[in-house]
Length: 166
Image 1 (cartoon, helix red, strand yellow):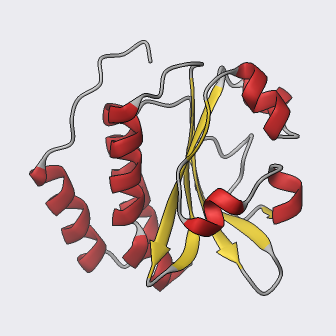
Image 2 (tube, rainbow, N blue to C red):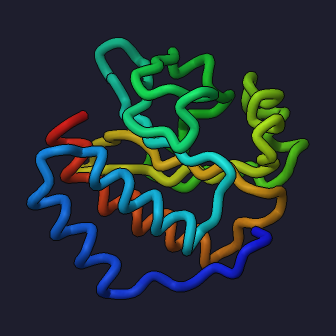
């Protein structure tokens, strides 16, 4: 990304866990994770989705851009991208550049209009079950090993919030 990113600290992690345990409003937790993603991963758009297994949909629980991607929006899994096996198995999905985003996401024009050219989806999982994803849309070719590790850690910190409020 164009900004200088920083590594997550133990204090960052404890801060999210403490807030998660105390906050009645899940948006407080999402906002704190948003700030940490901005600082450690970078993004143009950040969303948190939860899987609705019964209907094979995803529902947006959080969005950094409410106009383009409002909270509460739902989509059928089959319409989001072409391959859900990574999300189902709990692996990171990365579309590193515009060509990969265009090939994978039907809403790529809207994604590009926000200045994003890469997508990093980190699974939110508990007890072997997929709960959702933390989705970072950033500049093309901006997500490497450090950003992927930070996104994966932050996604896992959302487990209690998604379970309690999803």
